[in-house]
Length: 319
View 1 (cartoon, rainbow, N blue to C red):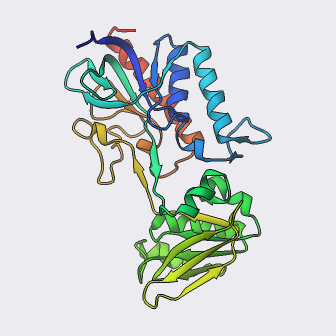
View 2 (cartoon, rainbow, N blue to C red):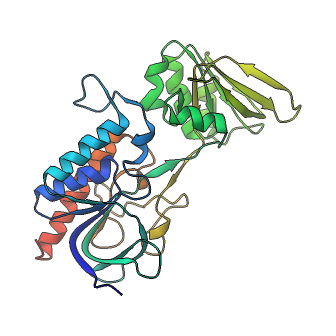
View 3 (cartoon, one colour):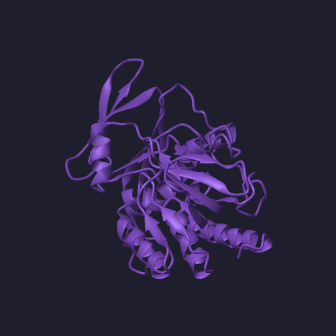
């Protein structure tokens, strides 16, 4: 077994939350170490244009923004490492964290831990959907992020829950027509949400309907869908394809120690703060936030987590 490494502040995850936490922690001389995890840069690596982050007057693409955030964190001497956390032990004052698989994982003893592991959007898994998503061709899991690009156009949104209804309502303000594809004969959304989308004139809801293929070579040109009762297929011409079937928070490795809700999101133990149920462990970003899920709110909570961690260390006489 290798000798454990002692760290003052460990940040797990490398989206806007993790890198903002790193910037604040490094400037406070907490000497943070940040592990990038399985998806360095987080969900923004799948986003082509980011137009709603303050300070980028002309907009910026997601990967470039993450490179900028990483460079800023490194400017203040954040130790940014590749690798992901495979096991934790939060039983004592010192938090034990293990990096990497195999017989000899790297063991870290941290005084504070900031969990910034984010959440991953669920996708249908169609080859055409993933291909067009990866080339920035009009497939998105965030209407608030990308709806603006489809102003005056026709779009499809897949989903049947409250967030799908929220996103459909948002898109309806921008787009000419919004078609919701609902797999079952009813929605899962609350009645109030259902009534809201049904009352909006330019939203059309197709029940018992599944996506067969997203059409288009370089960008979305249409959707082929199937009625799962009659098996009839039809094509619909659209330029945007939105998926709103939920997110999975990347928190499974913490489940034995951190209080999670039924979906796996970290429960905020003290409203208005980044505290978890474990002293010295803090949350930031989409691993706990299932409401807003924006880069700017993730960054804001990264700042909160670093400030809370600094105050925790000061109270313990460690900083």
